[in-house]
Image (cartoon, rainbow, N blue to C red; front, side, top):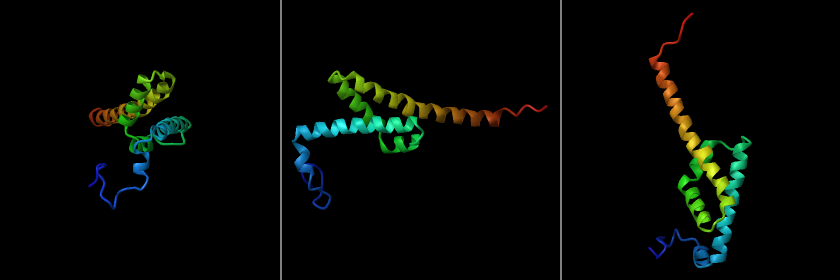
Length: 114
């Protein structure tokens, strides 16, 4: 293994090129933010499923991006990312809990008959 934790077969040729280039790292950082915004817009339009987003992008990744933007005092960028966490991730957790509660209640409370 090398200093980056890769075996020779796993190592990508371009990793060392990007390792110490702050300009490229910044470009990737802001490209990621733009992709988060695009993803959120498509989710709002109903073109991307919640599960697709939550499976592909860990919430911790978005939270780290928000933390970095807050340190840089770029709060406008933070608002969309915070909406993603609240509406998609937390909203999904709430929906799962409500579904479980409804299933539980359906088992416990017999339907009202007329």
